[in-house]
Image (tube, rainbow, N blue to C red):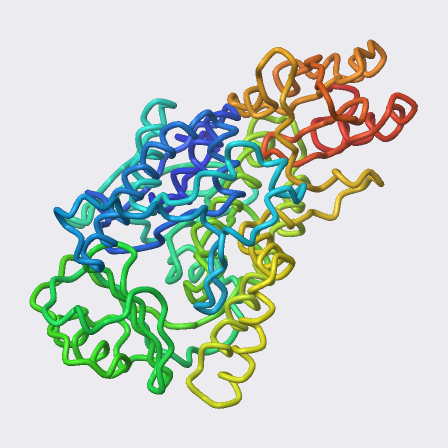
Length: 520
């Protein structure tokens, strides 16, 4: 089939845009089909985890995220001033502690976090960036997509597709008038959310558990807010959150899912829910943005069916607690992008795509269970409250905070890759080199990296013949013992690490496994 594009990405949210950018870095032509014509202002995730910050750091985007975080800190300070009634008294508002997260509304204190833990220390400056709202992530990725030449067709939606061994024909229609066209491609990736049209049309099995809660999240104007306690609050009738920005509320009721998930969220809905769980007489006078959610938890049995793949919420849905959804989807995009681009460019067999499900599905399954556990702890029942007290005590220790924070941040995840070195399968440490640069600086262009840390010509020779696929670089680190070298995949995962004596079959095999045998 003569293709218009190598890949069609259905869905132009953060995951779809991240994937499209990664595909372009890998040399694939890509079009994004997105039914919206402007950014979605519905309130979403308010922060990112360390793994997501690392992904942006490795693509040179961390400074932009740091600027957004500064604005988020200023909004937090405004909320603190409002709560403390300190406007005009000259007393400075406190700055939020370094983000450590929460588990089931149990706040993890950044002061108890063991920052010397290698999983955090190795992340470099990415560990200090977290307070970046989802809308800002989408804005930054839209700008990057334009810079990379990604075609984004706003106001269009996928209506169907036909795939065979030669390619795929994707039917799209303009939302405004229904006019349609057919886009020919080699691959289709559904990044079109929890109600994914791609997933349904392709027939992916989507097993999981049914919802038990009704949640609301909104930015509102209200009177009587002084009766609300800031932060996370468990009550006899549910749970609510007030802050960390002016007007932000979240409520959870444990009496079943909403009667109509699709119905618009009204001020009356929010007011009734907030009064019910808080026991206050607060009045909602205006709604800036609002959304309804449940703890519906399902995951596609596989992430690929022929020429169709899934990423982000199209592949897995769950409650938002712990802030895992956006981060899980960005991880999918980083893992899939370079692999699909390599297949498109003929640099790898289709079998490479099997590693996408093999590596990402277990992490998605873990996230679903992680969110289910939080729902169990948040229930307003005596048994759940007793268990929450136990977990709160554990989380109040350095070891407990560090454990939970490592899980939430994603730094403890490991792919099951061949190799005995403890770094293999892990996110690469952000090594600081003697010339003032860092490992992340060598990954901006989306290529793999064979890093020689021992000035070993034999090690470097293994990387010859891979051309643009693998950057070969020599660097030195001061004050820290390191392996002789690292092979880092484009997604920042260590594929091989070892000493000079281990550079034979291990390094050669890793290069062949991921980037083509003998440089071919």
